Structure formats: C-alpha cells, structure tokens
Length: 171
Image (tube, rainbow, N blue to C red):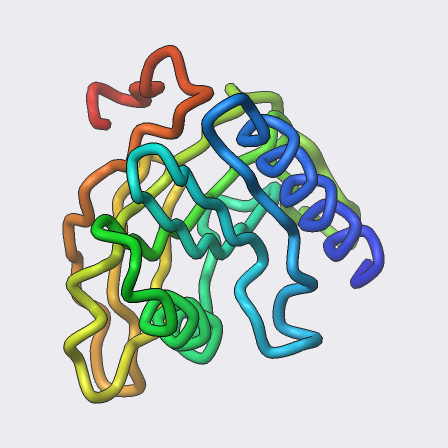
C-alpha cells in the first residue's frame, strides 16, 4: 500500500513539473522529504517569482502535510533574496475514486477529480509551524496536538490553470 501511495505522489509531482515547464517557467522535482527539500521548486525569471511546492495526492477525504515538510519549503525560499515574489504552495490532488473500508473490504466510490493550490506564506512567521490538513472541498485546517483550527489560505492560480474548480459552491 505504501508503494502505491508513494508512486501516486511521485506521478502528481511529475505532472506539476510537466505543466509548469513552459516558456516563462522552469520547474524541477527535487526529491522531496528523502533529501530534506521541497517536492518541487519553480521559478519565473521574467516576473521574479519563486515557488516552493509540497504536493500531496490521495483517494481519501483529507490530505495532510506534516510541519517539517512545510518548514523545508520556507528554508528554501529564504535562500533566494533575488526573487521579489516568493511563495510556499501546498498542492492537493483528490483523485476520482474515494477509497474506504467496509466490512474488511476496500470499496471505491466515484467522484470528481479536484486540485487545490494553497498559498501558506502566513505560516512563515510562526515559531512552530503546524501540520496542515485539506479536505475534498478545499477547506484547510491547522492541526496540532491540542487543537484543529480552520484557516483560510488563498488559492494560487497556477499558470496552467484555466479556472479554479469549485466543489459544493466553495473555492
């Protein structure tokens, strides 16, 4: 099961890199948590934009980004003062089939594929960055040992997005 989840994540990272590599953007997959770096770094040298992206993909109703992975993104963007626009982006992809267990069997339910790109720059000033949870309808939450609190992160419109998908009348 771990290999399936890992390969799903890798393929999502490669898809983001492929979509971003255009005339104005250069993106590279860095290897993620195994090397202590963000999943993806992308730059637009024409507009002075740097993105450190942590990508999560899954079949459930919620995806989580551990705090250490978010901290790695902030450590990378702090290295590049040349860029006037630097953002940490959390990318979430909820797959078409929702997986859940029922009476010792795995069951799949069809649904729309949705992706969210959240700007989490406001976490950069925190001493202790919390774990972040995103649900299928795009709501985000800070999760700590003591509490779970909803927080609204702005959407980042990726250069390859023609529109932002709306699920249940929420962005």
